Length: 238
Ligand SMILES: Nc1ncnc2c1ncn2[C@@H]1O[C@H](COP(=O)(O)OP(=O)(O)OP(=O)(O)O)[C@@H](O)[C@H]1O
Figure 1 (cartoon, rainbow, N blue to C red):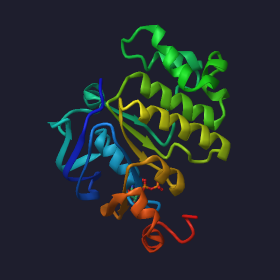
Figure 2: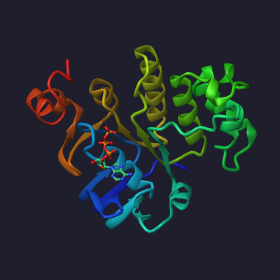
Figure 3: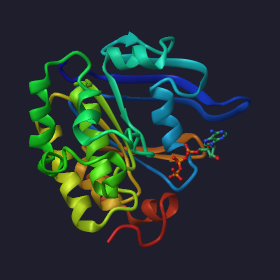
Figure 4: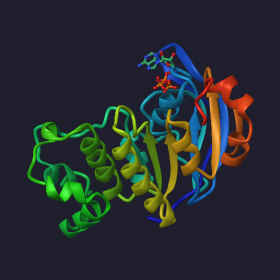
């Protein structure tokens, strides 16, 4: 499936009676990269989960290449092209790396596993290891590779670098950049490491208390230290 555009119109969503996202609208063109920034608890994970249909939606549209998927169940949104790599790195801990990857193939031939191994050679080395035996970085690679094998047209990455050593972060970001360069996926990245998020993205969106408070290019945000301090934190950009 080729990259698709994503358009969100007036989305309000949350958990039970708690509204977290209010009247949110933004769009991402096909094949481009958006980083979503903001302090803890501002609604970044809720936004990705809401796009995927994992929260309660109170209103609004979510359009993939113009087609509204907001009324679809999560599994049907995945079929339409949305793919989420959750912050929790959902992998099957008692299955091997290869078995985890097979679960991501969604009907594609087994030979497609090579795509995952080319993206993350470390997974090939560890293909017979069980999920729980992997390091945090390897679990993130596995979680990402499994989602990518389903060939999403819009990939949602939720804090993929959280808790990982700098060398592993660099490895993951390089893999995401290679993936983005293929132009086959539109990528939304939620990330606390602002330098990595800005290096990666064409455009950036900052959330505060469930609202979009700033949108612009990576260059514009990099050039505005006051904005970074106001919405993200003093000293987060060097
Ligand atoms: N399952 C839930 N039920 C009720 N409230 C929730 C739930 N998950 C998150 N929230 C609340 O929604 C708000 C937004 O949380 P969210 O996890 O989306 O923020 P975030 O920006 O991703 O934060 P972080 O960077 O810490 O992951 C917070 O006030 C949080 O307490």
